[in-house]
Length: 198
Image (cartoon, rainbow, N blue to C red; front, top):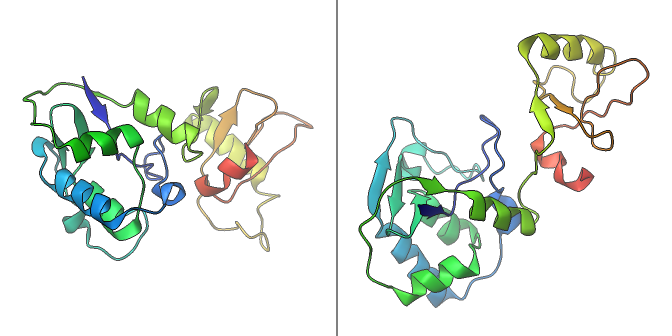
């Protein structure tokens, strides 16, 4: 198994991966440059048809963010990860930084990517969303919820006309949307608003 690092939350396909905006920190410039060089030097693990995109929406063209996963035989990361470290000063786990700075020889390895440690680290940093106990609604239920919210998100509401992500919480303390008469309904503007409410 290869350990994942640098895979980001994608609101086009919601996931539990961390949000890089919450991992911005300070770097020693020499250490940062070495980690960036290490990331660029990875071997190609997998190539995809679609391009990635910068989660900071900084204007870097998607084609420059890459469409491949790279590896050193121990870790796996997306081709665009060096951009986050270099341009946006996104911090990575100390264990990975130490590994990259040690500049150990690459190991020839492939196989599945284990993202559990990456997710756990992102959660510890307050950069990931724990969706345990939450379900994406079926199309039928989304239609019901949308109808229920129509009165609350009508003309004049800040979210009127916006596409809403709808989740059904099974835990009574954390509902984004609750079905049923008399149940409280909370509407968040988007995934970025989730973390402060947890």
